[in-house]
Length: 145
Ligand code: RB5
Image (cartoon, rainbow, N blue to C red; front, top):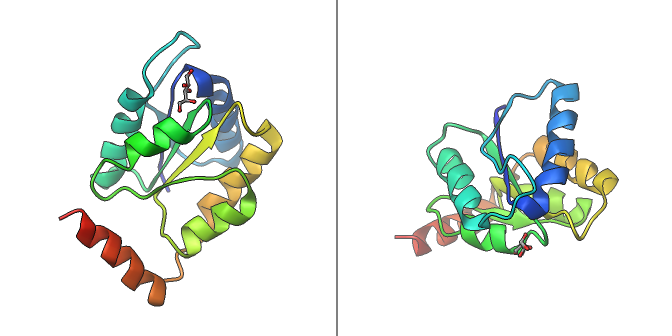
């Protein structure tokens, strides 16, 4: 499993913590920026990660901004992307089981790092359930065409 990571300045510090966590777990990743807390525009980083995931170059993406909202809205503009903003582990599990979300988004200014890393773990280990949920995801895909 290969993970594409991105954030704006508002998510930079949490992204650094997520990187450490993935390193400790031996999960390969690539960081598409931002590379500091200098003010930047979140759609740029949402697009960079979302395009890599949509192209199949990465299995999943993790995007972080201040609230997780802007970067989620932007990532979901890319065809094939189902980005889910999660602030709890139940939502992270359901985002995978029911929605087959391929990008997790989080808000650094909303949740603490301990919870954020638990959310990452749940998101990365949970499989899509398929079945009736596949039909619903297919309907979302149809809306893109
Ligand atoms: C940046 O100040 C902030 O607006 C951004 O990180 C994010 O919260 C937007 O949704």
